[in-house]
Length: 327
Ligand code: PBG
Image (cartoon, rainbow, N blue to C red; front, side, top):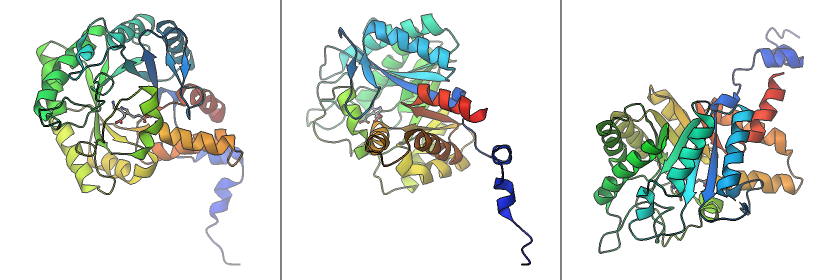
């Protein structure tokens, strides 16, 4: 036959395949997003996201215990306050839903989990935007930055190891870094959502945080057609002091993630967002795809594209599947 190279030889047993596999996802690289709702009596499921709920104060603590036991890397906490206003005032309340949750999580987990918190105003504003508005109703970028700086200090004071700047305001990483450093939080990390796209895949999340968004986020989140713009955002965030660079969503943006991971010398992260989860879950529920295999394949693809860190609602379950997979 004259066939000298036979790639199939490397695939002939499970042990061989495992031995030469380049990409293995470790549970320690996974971050679980967790929602906590102020004043909730019982956990409330979110449609389209099987197993994901808005937590009560008590069920939130159990979730932190589960995260510890699963051996994942960390949690990303989203707080939903009872009171919303145009300025997102509750975001700065040191005893508000998000700050209290951070404190509880840190008390339970110490340094055994990376406690990250969403640094954005959309959960706290009555209009649902990630920033505050000027008299014309447009986003006031620079006034928003002042609040982000204060919020960063409040979250750090509560015990967050890391803040996730997800608002896509210009200059946010620099302002947050300066605010943290000026309050002696030099060790608090910034996970910068550098390339965050205006995506339809955030659909179920909007229910998860009971978003009251009026209009859209097209003047601050990125246009899905652009990669150069992402590289610019990434360059700026690294220059402003980002510790980790995030690309979001994941699956429709693996090219951006790959390009980013080659372009920067800080770790890159990717967020498998609510709609991406919902899509896979819906197909699996219909019997069209093998759910567990599909989850592992998706995690692998994101890691292979360059993500050191993966935010995923499947983190707890995936940690179990991955341990099995390694064995
Ligand atoms: C904004 C934020 C959003 C998500 C994470 N942080 C929503 C948005 O930008 O509209 C989406 C996460 C998901 O869909 O899973 N604070």
